[in-house]
Amino acid sequence: MTALLTATDLHKTYGATPALAGAEFAIDAGEIVAVMGPSGSGKSTLLHCLAGIVPPDSGSVRYDGRELSALSDAERSALRRADFGFVFQFGQLVPELTCAENVALPLRLAGTGRRQAERRAVEWLARLEVDDVRHQRPGQISGGQGQRVAVARALVNNPRVLFADEPTGALDSLNGERVMELLTDAARESGAAVVLVTHESRVAAYSDREIVVRDGRSRDMAGAAA
Ligand code: ADP
Image 1 (cartoon, protein in one colour):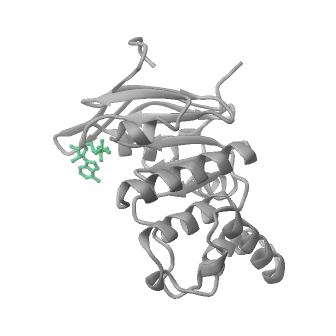
Image 2 (cartoon, rainbow, N blue to C red; image 1 turned 135 degrees about the vertical axis):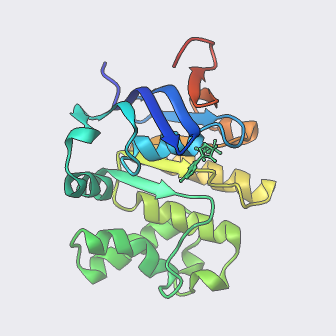
């Protein structure tokens, strides 16, 4: 079976700083893969290259049979909106919108009517066990609630790949574990693959497979090049 998303021999340098130096990656549909490694090892850069946010200096990223670098900026943006979801360390919710409006936003941008979008948003908030905050704004809720809202927003469009960059990095361990349980359950139910960047092994424990990035190079946990 061909993997859904692959990276081959990725190189990326920021000025004189090498961020990626031959990184490899592959994820199948519906798989949950943790990308581990110390701070500064290149994990976020790998995620950004895989998602088509940052162009690598060299190497290949293929998604669903397409080479990302062969697409135009507009095509890459459209692909990200339609097929990818994102959760970052700090939810990055829109502060002026209610939580339900935040979750509805990707649907609205994709052309879904307001009423249907809000109904689906509330369903997703309920799945993440935070439908009680639907009328509140991000500044009025806790960090753990905010990350659950962010997960709902990332999955509401049924993405094929969810990119999560330290999704529990700002939470205490109890809230972090609950967010990881809810995130992985929801992703498995909807069939989304998850690229999970973390430096914590207790977060990586929620994945099917772990790869380690060190000095911009990746290895899987079995020791072979990933
Ligand atoms: P990690 O996610 O593992 O902490 P990153 O991918 O963020 O690692 O960073 C890898 C290296 O690239 C680090 O040395 C970091 O300082 C550098 N780097 C990452 N992004 C940028 C950027 N936008 N500008 C300059 N340097 C960057």
